[in-house]
Image (tube, rainbow, N blue to C red; front, side):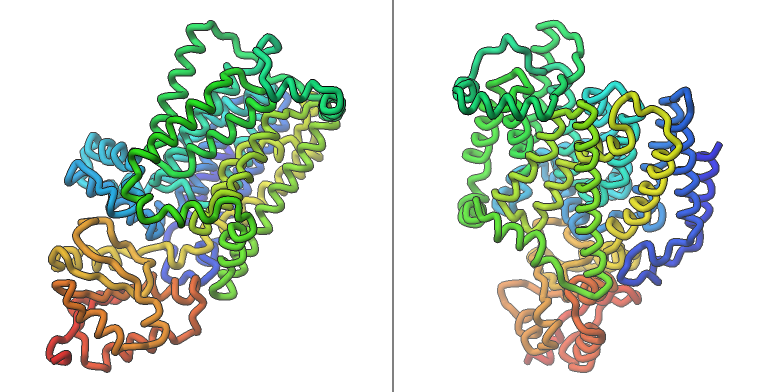
Length: 583
């Protein structure tokens, strides 16, 4: 009854929350204490389930489902629409596919990898929706539930201890704070990555009768052989649990893997290479049997890039190639360059970094505990470490470290769980269960800081969306749309019909004359400037502008007499240039 009571208490506690009163700490600044009382009730109940003599997987599943809803459903329930500008921009590409049935590779990088957008447009139309906004709103809950099945299969491969499996799942959801589970190519293709890994680990394990590779002959030389023998003795490696299968079944499963990879390649830039790196590493360390699979994957990925992304590569090849091997600059783009903004925002960034290190350190302790119990699984250790190789490839817009965290998280979560259940003989322990509960609550509280710490600018009010919809209703095709910062819900309609531009420097320097010159550009039929609540929040929170900067610009803009307000609903204003003032 505890989890049922927890969800009811949680729902009741979310009533009458004023999202407008959020500060730069994000959503946690407006959540009532009863939210965390409800989450502590759920955690206590989960601990009791773990401590029981008879372990019930059905009851445990109920706890996981409620946890996912409470962690990832809080924003959809309170806000009622998609979060972040990125989500709204991707909605625009989906809307374009629905309207035209085509993509334009010359427009941006997304449309050179259009598989996800085509699938999302198809699903939206099949479900009878006029647009994918509702799907995007609840995508975090849906995608995290979608991850459950392949994660369960993966963890079941590594251990027969049911407690270890379910605690691994619990930790995955507590630690998945990075927010890539919105309606996006990354969120959806991560599911396919997990499915491929679960199939390979279940049914394509290495057996001693496989042909010897060149690398294996090199390792069998005297010096290398002694070194490898000592490493194997140190690790006391165990084999993955076997799943019986027939040759025809393996052929079918391999065909499924290839089909899924063919879906990933035209849908996302990064996931194919993360998959190739993981599969190649497992084969190099003799953990999988389909030795030619990485070669086939590389051929498929390179073929798509060479023939289907020419429009993008023609103007961006140097941008892609220059960061290769530049580990230092890539790390700076992912760490140092992101530490800016208000004091509260920097605190959130520091907390994210600290939490990542805590999770990795817990995983390291779990690895040591498994090693001491002669239960360390080399396969999971490889898969936890391989994603870090990606840091030497690209900066990925300063987001690669988050993607590395995502791809390694399932296996880090397994080793985190091993801190409390290092082997099947660990069983019930009151002390371990109590410590597990405390660690879980620390991660839950941290989750609301790290995931929702930018919510003041990631959240969009209905009035802001209404303003953008009004703008699309009056703006003619070819118009220029300017924004003080690019943190607003735009580009979700008529994706190719307008020219979008952020004018952050103009707002920051209060340069009204330059703004008038930009809006008078005769390349565009007309120019609009839209200023919103979320832009003002991002200027303070993310860009670190001094207090009063935004307000001073708006006052100067209005007092100048060079601009007319054509829309104002309190959360958003839309301006056009007063042509009389230009004359």
